[in-house]
Length: 154
Image (tube, rainbow, N blue to C red; front, side):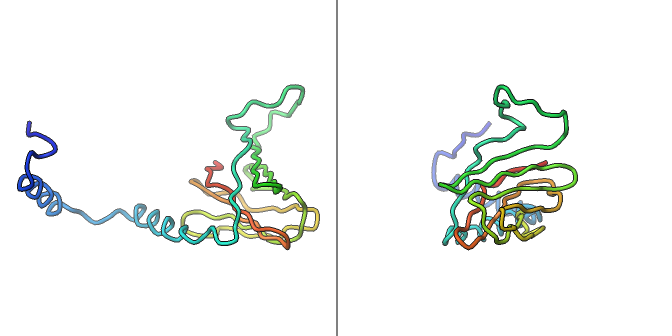
């Protein structure tokens, strides 16, 4: 077995040259992820990031509450005074923004927006079922703009 990393610059240069000669095309999913990461560079302009505060898929339910044995998953995100609560089921996503304001919410994947809906004056909205993989929600209202962290909803 050869020493790694190589002991001198000439051996390292030869090793790197061999690796470049063996290079294959970059897989499509790597290119998609790279483009999504690059597009993320300017998302923070005027947009607050909402952190995940509760996820029924991994957090214990508070004591005293009883729930049906349904398959819905609930998540709660917070950014300062803004709270975004969603319930995800086979049928789609329903949620509420607080403080309630009219506006728009969109659901995004690494390849772009997959659904968008109005937020009513009470803060309620409804979106289609999320695709597999990471998703984030973005909400724009008259008083604030917020995006959730990326989370897999399936």
